[in-house]
Length: 132
Figure 1 (cartoon, rainbow, N blue to C red):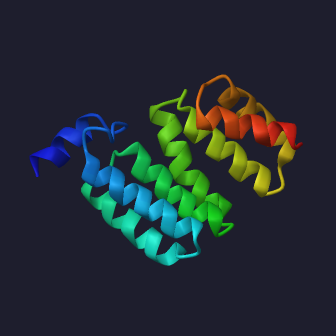
Figure 2 (cartoon, rainbow, N blue to C red):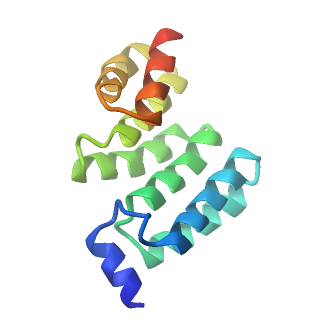
């Protein structure tokens, strides 16, 4: 249990906690492959154990995103951005959610901010902006 307390102090770090990283990846895989309810149950359990974990919050939000429940998806994403305003992955997911909900013009400034980062989140934001 002390591992979970340590994780709570550094909620954006999965590298030191391989068990949690594996569960997050499993949940994302399940959601991506249509097992949304199972993924959501997994992430809801992980939230209880690690309520401040950024990857877990974003994973739960992803389960809402793939089910077109954009308002619910944005709640968790905005919680992450409130605590970490420059979190590129959260910005990209928020931009994607806003765009998919039909508010493309509102998504553009969010995606533009995400594009300033590096890695997959910036690439996703660029891909979405290029497709507009």
